[in-house]
Image (cartoon, rainbow, N blue to C red; front, side, top):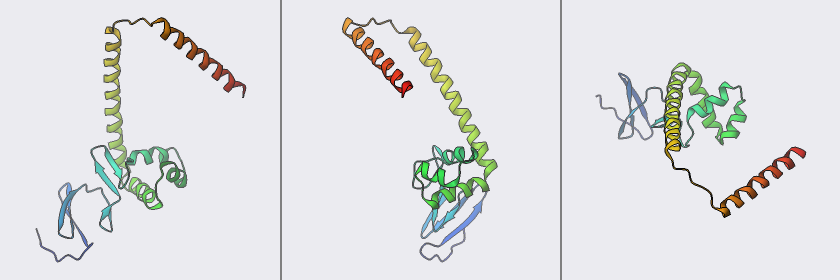
Length: 160
């Protein structure tokens, strides 16, 4: 590796195969090559959950869902409580890397669906093997009162 004289907040990005090495000050860090660096910090980072907006717990896919449904930039920003800089970075990143982001999102959705199917089946098995428990008279009375209250509330909501 070539030694470069570095000033504070100076960034050099060297492409090495799939990943890149970012030199920031005296620190070296392996990063995702799709990340974009602005003033020494990435606006979009890769976490164990997927591509995220730096400084938030929001995934890039949260923004992408609204964006693909045609929501305006300001509505997405306000709905997800993002700054102008964060929403601009997210939308720019989505536009610049749309194929990669969509492909990765599809993999995540497929894995989530497989996970949901697995746990639904486990729940069905659990409920099928669970012994039937009878309600005590007090529990049955409370349940009937609660059901009555729900029905009155629904009627009142429909009439208003």
